Length: 69
Image 1: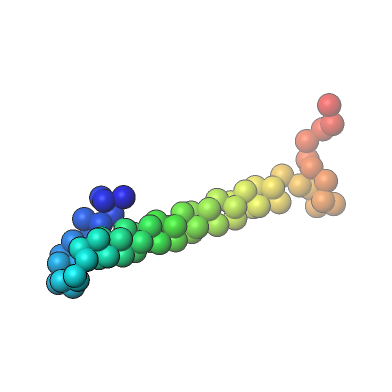
Image 2: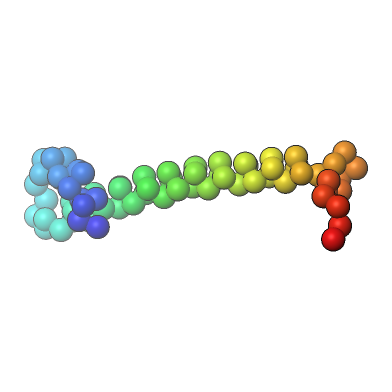
């Protein structure tokens, strides 16, 4: 978590807050939000790809093109 705080150490230093933990926690929160947003975008892209593959695997009548076993 403190690796996230280091990303914003310069900005946190300018804040000069009475409690040094507050800027560190805020920096951690900012980085975690960015990471969650990135993961959300990646998940959405993967779901879109899976839906496309699922649609491509179905024939024109909506059934799968594979033969039943």
